[in-house]
Length: 332
Image (tube, rainbow, N blue to C red; front, side, top):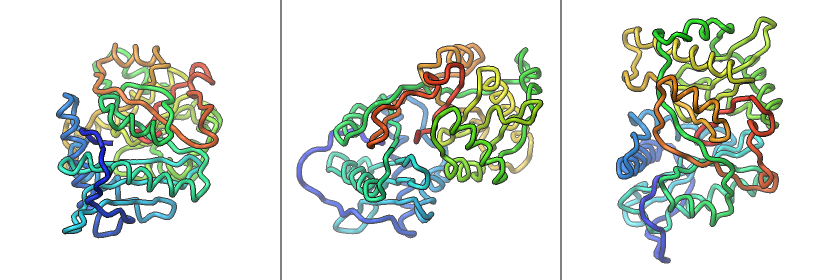
């Protein structure tokens, strides 16, 4: 959550209500400004490059199983903050949550969090996940007070594996790459996720892979899926690979997709957006070492958190299944 001041006091100069169609643009603007203002304050890169990203993030509010809330000014009805919870899979995902900078410290963030938590409880969701920026102790403290436990920390890395890299061509050709776009492919990736991570996230894989950024999967010579990414060009995606080599090939293939996209006229992306971006957990030091040795830059540190009756015993998939590479999204 983008918030810079401590929430305190009993005054509530806002109204909490479900998100409506007319709130989308205003909520997206609040999110865009709040996150980027905070990131500038703590000297980390902007969270979002353009408003279309936050509009996309909140546009799912009208989807069945996704619930959005806003806080509005009691006087003029202006949207001051927003939050979402996606309950389509057995693991509920919270965010993005944001409160307008000028109206922080008034309890808006807590109200928005309590609204989505209450929704999850009514739906009997047994696992609720979110990620917090480790540069924001206020938000982290709020989440802990609301019952969330820190599961693992990770670094966010940005870069691209260029064709001039000695390993680029061999990694690019190691497996057969395909665009992730069919229902069969979504199910195959979900089966891999269930096998390696223990839970399904079919709806999340499906919705993320239908977004405008590239999403891919890799198959071995037997046709088995060994890795996939729902979009390494954005932190809202996640990626999974059976081992380090499959992850490296995934990075090479995604880099290739983005480099090809850059050559196409009218692609609509800014050049600095055409780079690979992902979260690497600190429990995977071999992955961290490889990405940093190949020119990827650490931009920030985040912590993945969870709550719910089936979430207290969480162990990172890469700890349970030694050798796999799981790169979480900004949700989980």
